[in-house]
Image 1 (cartoon, rainbow, N blue to C red):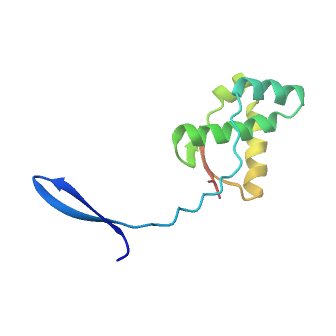
Image 2 (image 1 turned 30 degrees about the horizontal axis):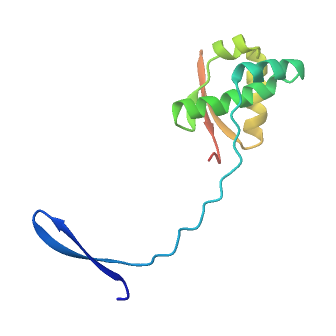
Length: 119
């Protein structure tokens, strides 16, 4: 077997254990990832005149918060950060056309968004 013999005691019995020289696991390649403070992102998107960027960052935040690719997207917090309802809807439409998200629209309720090809 080619391994080193050792003995361990379990419940009063001596058990022979053979250790092997297993190869080291290959290191996993990690995808690039960034933590962004939401308040800073809100200020940066306002300064750059690009509130859609804030909506995109907010989508990724909600996916992380819910630990799921699918979540509801209410207007309240986005509005407080500086992205209007109109900006939210136009951003969602663009992302849906690009095949990055799917949207379940509900009458008089927040849409349910699913991030596609996420993670």
